[in-house]
Length: 218
Image (cartoon, rainbow, N blue to C red; front, side, top):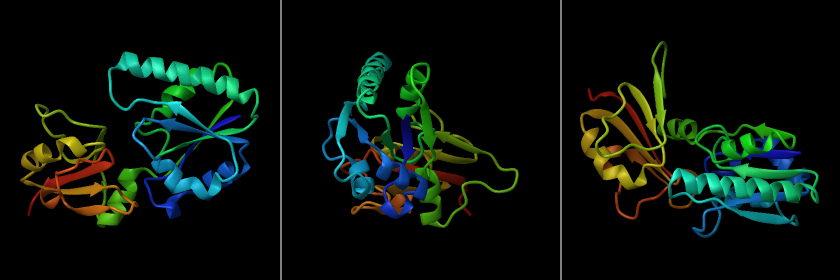
């Protein structure tokens, strides 16, 4: 069995009991490796991965879709070989495996060949809204979620969440100047920053940046 387990946005205390148990019981762990250094997943869930074999799978965060597809197919082949040795493996995923996660592509490639299970995690947008004390959406309101936004794109109307937007933070500050907007950077990590979007630091952009947009400023 291969288990994709959501480990939440960054705070180890937001790791679910179900995910923790899966990690503890696993024969081995597979980690996405973007080549950017220490894994945030290991910071979150490292206590449950001790004394287990850990395999790093190349998973680029930049490049075109063809590059990503090739990396996913290679990772799927590696996982199928590893599962011959380790009957139960866990692939921990930041946030939730179903929200803009590379694991969803891997799961699709692997399901025809091997049993796959998914354990949901707390999405970053939910933890971010709780940290800010704002509602993502209320009665009969809609919520738009996007993983990034281009400089020439208009902002979504109404309630919206823009994930992975560290590099476009300055542009978002200008576009959303008339709206209630909040920025959350490195949520649950040592250098966490949370506050109004207009006050968010734009230097040294972080991949782990989420913006919450609401209605017009009052």
